[in-house]
Image 1 (cartoon, rainbow, N blue to C red):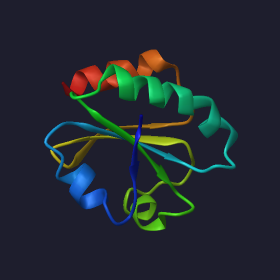
Image 2 (image 1 turned 30 degrees about the horizontal axis):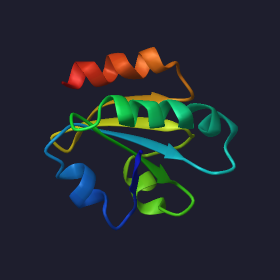
Image 3 (image 1 turned 30 degrees about the vertical axis):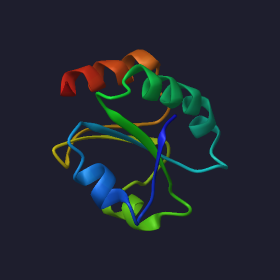
Length: 105
């Protein structure tokens, strides 16, 4: 299951993570976010133990969303060693996300 990132745990769980991190910025009312949600869950299972994959609800966690300049959702941010290495805006096919994840490994 995808990890739930918040303003309170983001520094520890994402920035300081020993493995690469994929963060899906979403909101419950967002149609494209709902479309990509099952893909995020699948990826979380597929890469368990190798990559930490999680979600940030932008309505509840404005601090993290602001820090990463999330202007539209879904925005998926790829972090390695605490730094942004890639970003995808909008709902994209699973293969696109897999390519970006594999590039971090």
